[in-house]
Image (cartoon, rainbow, N blue to C red; front, side):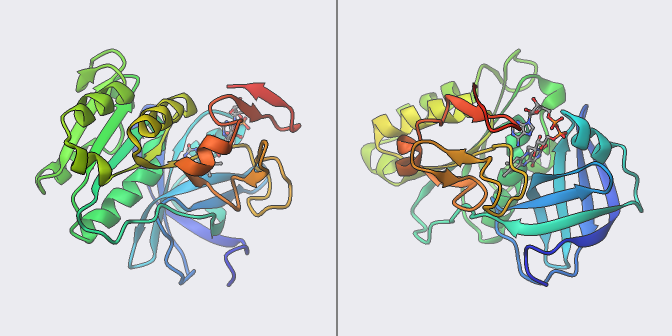
Amino acid sequence: MTNNMIETVKIKKILNECDGIKTLIFDRNYTNIPKPGQFVMIWVPGVDEIPMSISSYKNNGEWAITVKNIGECTDSIHKLKVGDYIGVRGPLGNFFKIPQETNKNIFLIGGGIGMAPLRFLATELIKMGRKFKLILGAKEETEVIFINEFLDYQKKELDLFFCTDDGSFGEKGVTTDLFEKIIENLNTEEIKNTIVFTCGPEIMMYKILQICEEKKIELYASLERIMRCGCGLCGLCVLDPIGLLVCNDGPVFSSKSLAEIKDFGQYKRDFSGKKNSI
Ligand SMILES: Cc1cc2nc3c(=O)[nH]c(=O)nc-3n(C[C@H](O)[C@H](O)[C@H](O)COP(=O)(O)OP(=O)(O)OC[C@H]3O[C@@H](n4cnc5c(N)ncnc54)[C@H](O)[C@@H]3O)c2cc1C
């Protein structure tokens, strides 16, 4: 099977992460191992096919996606039951490249549903015995996802930082403020060795890019755009002015590319291809 063929899979387990967010777990016959940051196209028969990050992969062939209910197709995914079938195409796109150098000071910064691909990345880093700092932000406590899993990570002496807009969990404030506060205490060598992986609201990632540019910190951000095909045909996810496609060239982009993408933090295309302010 190539990674662009639809495979029909049976939903094995459904977890309610929080109000409006569910994780769907299924087994696949697909034998290539996906990498953190890659996504799959999920086809709900009779409804639509939409992109979803892989939120977990286990060596026994168990995959997971974590879905926020925001519209027609995600709502139909939320109505599925264990034993129902969906179509899965992928893994597609590029991925978060874990640096070989073990002295890297790795930050994972996630906002809301953006934690989905970062959770897969966190699991891989733990498997490799790599240390990292995780900054997780959400609007309020009820929207903080994967929390028990992350608190378990803390036992492995990882640095975890939580924040919510209303202060109901962790610090009151946003991820970017926390990030700025943490890096203020780093010395020049630590800053030089810092690498940031982020996914979340584009406004958040745009601010992180500005902070990283100022401090000359290496950054990789996973972008979301509407896409129909997921494989470079429809052109809906094109980024101006350099014409990169989120599906084929991304979804993960380096700070160098992000600085050249004028759409980043400014515009997103709708289903007709028209650009709208973020
Ligand atoms: C690479 C990639 C990975 C993604 N990973 C996840 C994930 O792990 N979990 C998750 O819940 N969602 C993820 N998304 C977003 C998800 O694909 C959209 O939320 C979904 O397509 C919305 O479909 P819908 O039919 O439910 O909503 P619609 O009814 O189509 O749209 C509802 C609203 O959301 C907007 N919208 C639709 N699609 C997107 C999109 N792709 N990006 C931004 N706004 C959109 C529409 O303009 C509209 O305002 C990802 C998107 C991409 C491109």
